[in-house]
Length: 245
Figure 1 (cartoon, one colour):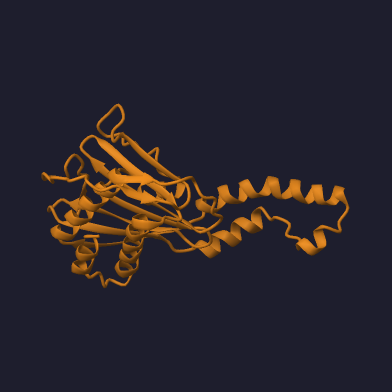
Figure 2 (figure 1 turned 90 degrees about the vertical axis):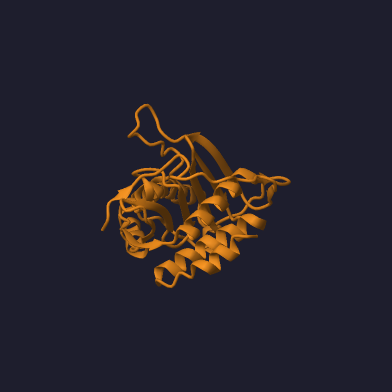
């Protein structure tokens, strides 16, 4: 495979951005960050906005385009777009291939006690407290162990300049314009998405739990890119058109 070149700043060319429309969000919690892309030295990238699984996916540097999809009860997936040594844009699809196996192994190592509600209400108080304390101690260990067991697979293939530039422009404008609306909603389970891009000397990231409105449109487009890329049936023109919303 051709060596990948890490490209930041304006991704090798000038792109004029027009930030005129505010995206309003009424979904779950979100976190929007703008930080330095590099820390102290030119070869130390700021990856503070990435969680443990994201670091397994994209931990070596911040790509001009990154998208991460994390559902509650399935393996995570995502993609990034970079340039190779020949100046060709490469889409790297990342996904966890052994989620069920890792879940079982972690659960076997740190088992919790599951008791139906109809039964637990009839248990003595001291037994209920023992169950609660046991699970309270096991859950953090279970969730810490499971990502360590994940196997991350990568599929890479070239994409056109037009597709890469369009997605980059839209990602930058989307993060820049994103605003909340109303008050934070409490949403259990579901999924979270993270959008990340590099603009000049900064890395911008936006993590959203259960996006709504235009954030949902953008999320759905990126999730469909993952699906199509996984089957190597990526219709670039379709996405170029979809990104005009």
